[in-house]
Image (tube, rainbow over all chains, first blue to last red):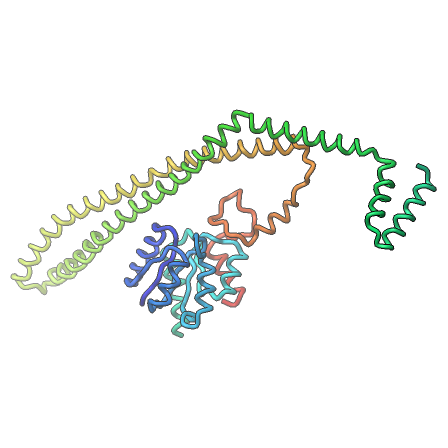
Amino acid sequence: MKILVVDDFSTMRRIVKNLLGDLGFKNIEEADDGNTALPKLQSGNFDFLVTDWNMPGMTGIDLLKAVRADPNLASLPVLMVTAESKREQIIEAAQAGVNGYVVKPFTAGTLEEKISKIFERVNG
Amino acid sequence: MDKDNKLELARRLVAELEADNEEMASNTLAELTASDSNPGDLFQEVGRLTRELHEAINGFVMDTAMAEMVQVDIPDATERLQYVIETTETAAHQTLTAIEGALPVSERLKSKAEHLNQQWGKFLQREMKVDDFKALSGELSEFLQNTAEDSNELHDKMNEIMMAQGFQDITGQIIKKVIKLVQDVEGRLIHLVKLAGNAHTSKNDEDIRKQKMAEEDGPVVPGVTQSQVVSGQDDVDDLLSSLGF
C-alpha cells in the first residue's frame, strides 16, 4: 500500500505519517501542495491519497478535481484531512468525489476509522 | 427663463436629436440647463469636497501615530507573525522527535515484559526446568536494570515534549500585539472614512459576506468565523451521510 500525504505544513505531514505508520502503513511519500503532488501521483503507482485543502499553489480541492479528471487516477481513494469546516466546502468536496473528510484537529481513532471505511468500500 | 422659453428649447432639442444633429442638440441642452442652475455652485461643491478629502488624507498621513504604524508596526507585525509560524513549527518538530524517540522504548518494554510474563507463568505452574529457570533469572535481572534506564529515557522524552510547549506563551503574546495593532489601524481607517464625509456608501455587508462564503478561511476562530461551519467530525459525518455517503 503506497500512500501520498499532501500538506503545506511539514509538521502536519509528519503527524499524519506517524499515525499512518502506527496503522501499519509504512510506504508513505510526501508533497507540499497539489502542484508537486499531481506529477508524483501520475508517475508513482499510489494506492491512496491523503490531502489538506488550503495550500499555496494548487489547493487540495483542485488536486482532487484533477485526480478525478485523470483517467489513470480517477478511481484513486482520496481522504481529505483539513481545517476547512464550512458546510459549503464539505459539500463541494463530496461533489468532487472525495472518499472521506476528516476535520482538524482530529484523533488517531478518527483517521483510522475513516481509512478503514474507505478500504471496506473500495474492496467490497 | 419662463416656461414658454423652456418648452421652446425642449422642443428644439427633441427636433435636433431626431434629426441626428448632435452638435446643435448639445448646444441647446447646454442653453436649457445653464439657465437655471449656476455652474459655479457645482464647481464650488466639487471644490469643497476636494478640499475636505485633501485635508482628511493629509491629516491621515501627517498623523504620526499612523505613520509609525505604516512604517514600523505593520512590517514588524508581519515579522512577528512569521516568527509565530517558525516557533510553532519548531515546537511541533521538537515534540514529534521526542515521541519518535520514545515510541520504540515503550515498544521494547512492552514486548520484553510480555515475554517474561509468559516465562514467569511457566515457573509458577512448575513447568520450568532448572536450566530454564537460571536463564529466566538472568533475563529478569537484566530486564529490571534496563527498565530503570528505559524509564529514565521516557521521562526525558516527556520532559522535552513538555518544554516544547513553551512556544504557546511566546506566540500568544505576539498574536495579542498584532491584534491590538489591527484594531488601531481599523479605528483610524473608520476615522478617515468619517472625515471623507462617508459620501460613498459601501457595498452591503451581506453581499460581501455571501461572496466570502465559499472562500477558504482555514481553522475556525471563535467569534470571527461567521459562515455556517460544522462543529466537529460528527457533523461532517452527518452532512456527508445526508449526501449519500
